[in-house]
Length: 338
Image 1 (cartoon, helix red, strand yellow):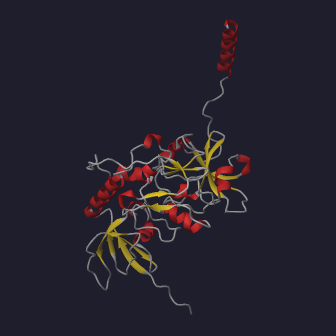
Image 2 (tube, helix red, strand yellow; image 1 turned 180 degrees about the horizontal axis):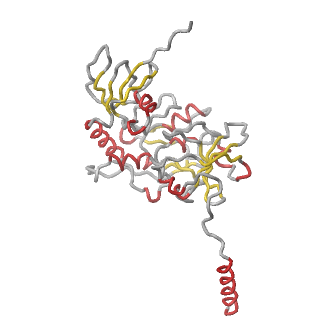
Image 3 (cartoon, helix red, strand yellow; image 1 turned 135 degrees about the vertical axis):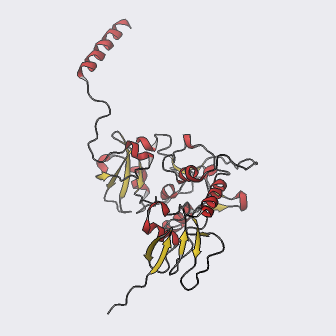
């Protein structure tokens, strides 16, 4: 007879959940879902070793376990703290956590420029959401921001180091998904930066995934730069028979044109299957893909404002024969006057 699987019971904001031993508080909260899930800017469940950098997922452990009910003396990073049986955790129900998260967001925005109007990440940026939910009205920082020149670290990847929050996600992707890693953290302290020693050094077939995992607009797709706003596009799930990757992607349409291709993301903004550069950059024709269905979009996302749920949305401009005829007559009269 098979042994019964051991489960720990942890209570988060008054909601109990049974999870396997070794589960982090963050993943336990994700099993519950909803507003009690702590935000995460650096943790990525598909990347080994990620987490513990940004501190946005801080929570309060008001009860350690059934065996040792003492609370933890300080707030802990939920992505790095494993659950214990009988543990009680406070996230949005703790004023201390909300205040600490506000301070973390203020630190993240110390050097990050507020250039959302020109940033391609606007509309799907987790830092925007955090700034709206927990940001202060103005910064208390009195010194100048760090500034860097934009550089091309790959054939189709541009790095805006001014926007980087040093979450290390792109470094983990390159380290675990490609044969060799060409970029990383240079220098120390407030001089730290993501970079390569040689520009345009990132040319691995899977290196484009650093764009998908970047939570801010530090790493951008040069083939999509300034082409459109994400809320004016329509995402559609599609797939193709690709020898290098799963071939499962999201196509971002504007009219009949595919403006960009990304990996499919789950409800927490994490890529389900990493895709190759061929699928991402070189296959932007509809006839190269098998369309599945419109991508499911969070109802609170700005992308939802232009979203549709079937493949026959109403035309943006309806045909008007009488108006077209009048336009042709006006054009003919204008041509005679030239």
